[in-house]
Image (tube, rainbow, N blue to C red):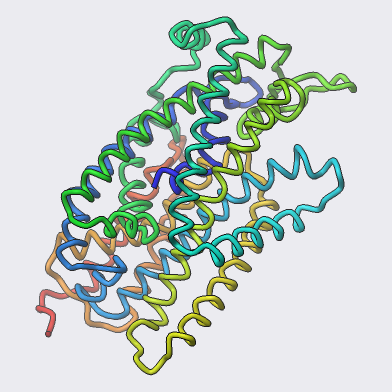
Length: 462
């Protein structure tokens, strides 16, 4: 679970959030992201004590089966489709970040094209999951996650040693530069602390509690009590690990400044041979220090090991869960007695390869977008794609109303994100208020209201 959650985004993008730009002035974002992490932590309690009991009570294999039993087949398929969209986009954004770092800092120097890098890595992931199976994925993902966390610890120790500081002294030094400020009190800002706290909580409910990939790890635990323990232990672990990544981020900016980094006119970085500043802030700071000779060679190796270790657990799990959900929820191959096991296996392999192709195309799109802070981009996308799932599950759990008109559920689930987008654009144009990660709450609420308007009080027929 930790490996799936702590992808390359956590390894690279979370430390990078400590620094950000405001106009042409360089300022530090500090630990504002940690308010979202605290929101994540609160969200895990809701997942553990509201959603997990429901899933265990109904003995679900696919969590979207609940929607089919609560409403109808259309709801079941709608939930699955939005999971497929959400996980595909989220997983490829994470993949893109790692591939792009390897491309920019290593492979561009030997003229390897980006598309070829992407193709080879995806091929490795496909072979890895196909040859190894689920058991191998569990064992190797655990090993790779261990390497990623060890890389984090080694990098922190190295920088503290170079700066001749203890952990406490390092934190205090970071605090002197205001790198550690936690709360943004500007209500109009997209990172206002209440927005990130509440948004983070609902993002966890959506991206963990309503996500087949994450929940299949929990509902495979032998009983509900142990599953809750698993979820809450995981929640506490993420608090510690995300703090460590943010602490590393502060050290990275501090180390860069003490080794010649300068800032001005909207950039932060080192002066190149042409007398210009090469911007290394955001997602670029950790790779730049590791792979451009600022850190010694052994740290560069540790960085690459950590990066690759962060890549595979999230990528292979995503492809496997997407294949499983598509085959079980949409194709329903497990319920079809007329299909032989050989045909089912062939279908799964075909679907797996199709999703791999989709991953390739989406990574190319992210390369075209080339956003400098993938972590916030992922949260923004999640607001649009997980919002309908949030509204649909909330409507099913907290009301007794039913929906009988055909295509109504899918229509509401499609309209709500569009209305959310329009509202967001209107706020941008006509107000100073910036909608942040609370976007998922707005989207879920609009979905809930839409479902209420098209529902009725009649009980569902058996």
